Length: 200
Length: 200
Image (tube, rainbow over all chains, first blue to last red; front, side):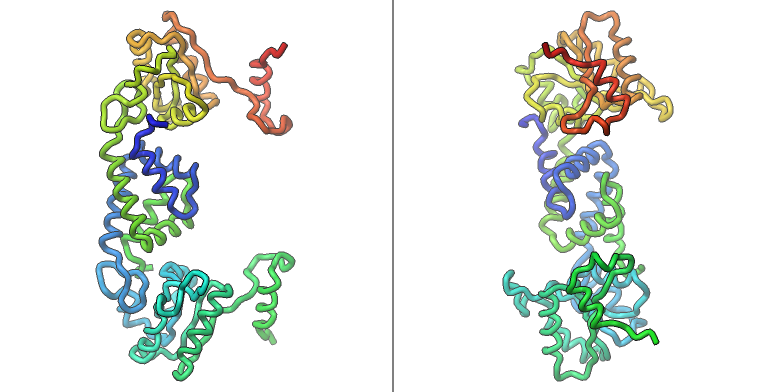
């Protein structure tokens, strides 16, 4: 349809690139923004601000604002001695929203995947050793979403730190609260049985 | 969570203002954009372009790019003599996507709603008369989404043009293709019976 403004078509295409936004949502959002110019301008300003202010933290590889080192890494009160390894920056947000853990974090930026060509040198893994030494962590908690690739990555990290005096754990796999046991996959069920907790 | 970058928080809030985007989607999209800076920059550029280039057409009140008059209003080949009245600019897109109608359009910008304080003077209704005269339309097709308020608006328009020599129609209300008749609301069913088409 040649009469549709080209910049509007482009905007719909841009929104379709975002996760969870399909044809219809992109269409609705684009037209909405054209009518609500204040929201459009607000989004514009904030995107610009985010692009300019947010960088990767030099220490943990999570997000940092206006600074080389993020506020978690710079926080002297976080002295639990626990370093939590996660795949993505947003995983920090999810973990912290559970409760005030007082942990520090390390973002690998992915998990090993020979199929996708992701080898250890493409991830932020090797600097974990250095952090354990310089920051004196006593425990490493690995908090990946459970799948085969992250299991391999966990093994790799455990091997890498083999000679170091540090406890390594990974978060438990089991049944999520509220799910019917008959709906659970056998793998999770098996892990849940292996990881059973003594009550008495 | 004070450690979350303030610009990131703002971005999540901005996305939550958009139609169909809830807490979780806004979170996912914001983190996605922080990692995919090319997409972020692309969105930024396009939003800016849209804001600068798209305005309301002086004639039909739909969207126009770089010009006071949109390409549909400026299109000399659209000489079907039919003016289609719609509520929102995006309705033009939806109607045109059905087939090449060759119609011209007029966007009211809403429907009458005493409850919301939307009176006739807040809508683009009065200039329809002028357009009929100057552009010589023979038929007016009213294409509102069917509800009580748009019925009232339709009546208002019909009254307003009472003394003019023009055919006025509205698009049919009936069963949408593929729906089970038992699932249809009585209002639609009744309209569908009233508007039945002779087959033989």
